[in-house]
Length: 113
Image (tube, rainbow, N blue to C red; front, side, top):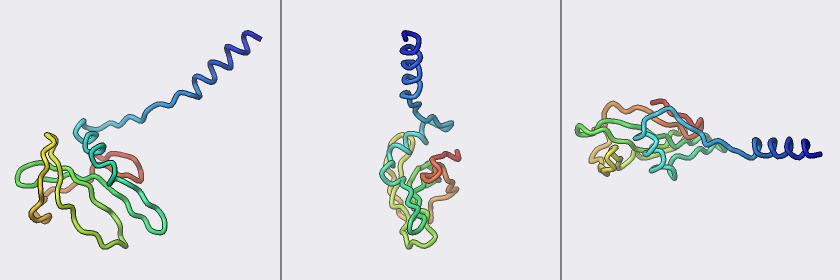
């Protein structure tokens, strides 16, 4: 009976432990994911609408910003982003953001950086 109790306790401990997901990406990208967590959502019905994290270069600075990816939606481009130094950068014209690359996808919960 004592062995059964120890065995059951060990099983409960292993099943009760939930590992936090770790990502293989930069500290800055992780910080930006946390900063924009409210905007980085995934809606699959009735249409796919995904909040993704992007980075680009604006006036010589690397900035991170969220954007909605949706084929059927009429969305406006982001108005601002943040640098890794936590400086808010207002985009005068979003067209001036160059070298835009995806960093994080909310629907797949994965980084591409």
